[in-house]
Length: 348
Image (cartoon, rainbow, N blue to C red; front, side):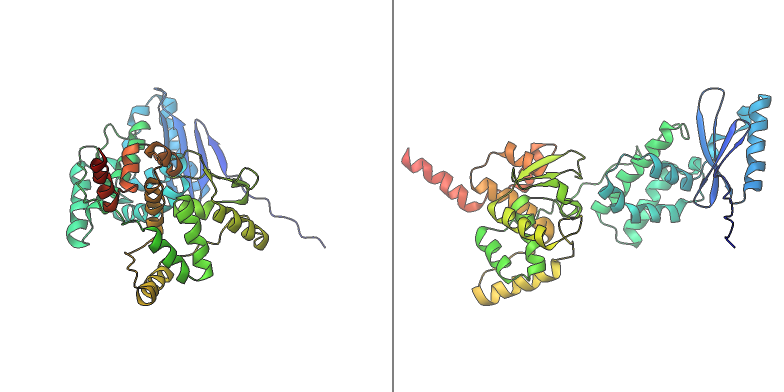
């Protein structure tokens, strides 16, 4: 005898002027005040009957003209984060990168009403993290930047009149720019890397892509005929096209034959292999290689182009930077080139 399927309860209910929607396990309300202001808030109920009772109270006040008694400021910080997850414009990589940050903020203030989160409360939290957790200036600024964006959403939705994070100043950071590798160092490092890490290092150093961009690269983004890679999922949100070197073209053709996967590479943390390869290069070839991370290859890519006389505006396009000032941080002028520059005066 065939089993009868149990009919699932709908996830949207109308209670007068209030719409109930289920998100995860909790029922949320969506309604408009007579002013046109849209209100979205949680009922803090998981049972539909209990949620309906809460919605009925709101509907009664809307219908009777007592809507001014509905306090939009009752929203909590956890509700704001839910709203943020649905409406933010961050790229996928940035959203993932701030996931831990948002979890910590939610653990700290999840049940707080937004009106309780004043500038003093936010600034006190950041200062306490610096004292107790030894949070650095860069991390401080990343937290503050995220807070500003998140509370901006509360202002746009009329949940708050002002953004409590706006008045907090960013801290001045020391710029730690990775030391780019020269050609000899690149060749030595690649020589001692195992195949799986060598593939990733070559693609990074010959394209200048960010790690996240290479990790998200799919075969539809690779055009073997025009020898171009299209970066669609970038930090800036803009697409860009990167011509392939002969080495990259050959490597990608080989990978295409080997991999039936959607993504071009199988990403892994290569730092351990890079450290071992650096030690081998020093021991066997007496070549000193500075501390190298995947992001170092992006700085190396830019500096190698500058070494070969490529104009900064073209390097900017290849890196996908919004401003040429940022490109100047990546493309470093080497000391030996300054000596060559002065030497040209001898010919005058």
